[in-house]
Length: 329
Ligand SMILES: Nc1nc2c(ncn2[C@@H]2O[C@H](COP(=O)(O)OP(=O)(O)OP(=O)(O)O)[C@@H](O)[C@H]2O)c(=O)[nH]1
Ligand SMILES: [Mg+2]
Image 1: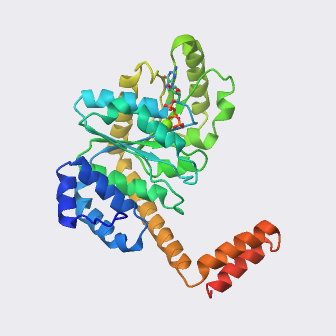
Image 2: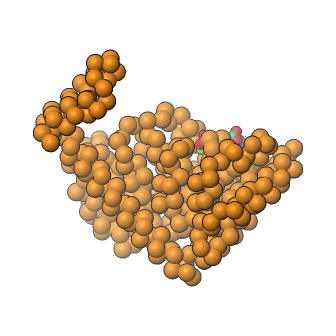
Image 3: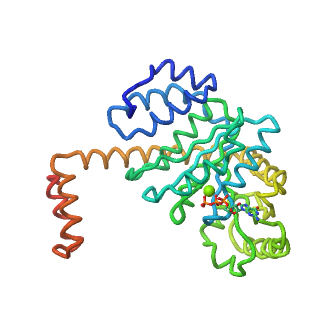
């Protein structure tokens, strides 16, 4: 562990299994560690816990910044806790170079949920980790499942590439939209609509109610022209107000309905198999990168290449070749 106080592996495993949030937190920190010497312990822990994983509903929330993802997660999380569920919340920011400002904001925004005994909230790993953030989140999901969480809500903080990563991380992907801008359809990428299993027009409150209903109609129509995210499932378009807590039951009904279709059709196992495949790929990618960068002189060559490209002294292909040469490849 980064602080040098490595917990006893057996204790950590037992702690996670007993649902101890401190142990779960420590286990995730271990899994997130980028120190190569932590990797064996992290992988051993995950391997030991693997048989106890897979039991949660893995639900992703994505949408443009400010759509209300964190607010919705807090509202839905509290709603679920009231119904006896144990809820874990993870945030994922695939563009890990971001400032992390909104992650801090999330921590304060989810204040009510954070104090619940039955909730566990974990912001995404910060810092410039090359690649691997989705992988870390994947491992965090497994650890939360081993700790007995029934529902894992994953908030996608990054925009852009994150949708496909999210789709490979969760079983059910909810897309949160906001009404009232008039150009909703243009603002949402087709790719995102295609992978959404549940679409929610949020902020359907106050003077936005009519706009939300109109947006819902527009999105329903737009979805009819796309192939379904899940064969045999018609992606519902709902309205909700995360702020006022309306529409939560409908969202949850949709998530459970989607889950049932996945289970009955055998697609859940298919999705999970795909999630494992991507997990392994990302581990190999991380290891390959790590292996490459740890070669004698490569880090320096990368820095020199960056400087040479910045100053115009070398073109990108030239700089890239110089890095390869430094690695002796
Ligand atoms: N009126 C209204 N405001 C909302 C609703 N949901 C969220 N908001 C507000 O919208 C703003 C953004 O909400 P967040 O939950 O932080 O949105 P987010 O999607 O998590 O944002 P990022 O994490 O920064 O991408 C906040 O000021 C919320 O209070 C809603 O249902 N109705
Ligand atoms: Mg947020």
